Image (tube, rainbow, N blue to C red; front, side, top):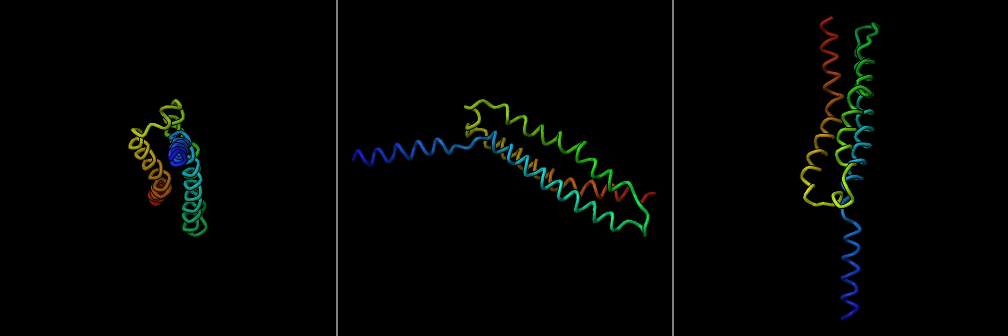
Amino acid sequence: MNKALGSHEHTTERAAERRRDWRKGMSDNVASALIVYTGLQIFVTVHAMKDAVSGSVSLLPYLALAVLVVAIIPACRKFERRWVNLSDEESADPSLAGAYRRDQILLWLLAIGLPFVLTGLFRAIASLT
């Protein structure tokens, strides 16, 4: 019987150690989202440059790449800042799961959607000129 109780205590300790750390989770999501965003932005921009009108060189694709530094990094930092500043106790608080999931979804929508939105916007501007 003691052996069974000891096993339960050990399992409980492991469960406590495996609790979700919202700080690390969001930091990992931000790092991954920046990599995905950068890859998509480069791919979509290079594709837009290939579609440029017969030999004319446009600065718009390069401007789209510059938006990476101007917009996405501070936006990602804002997502991360909210979670990094949590105390040790708050970092494992299960009541934050909904807010974490909301920020995670918004972050990934931004990382995946923004390259296409920016390229579409810059293409629309280029077609007006």
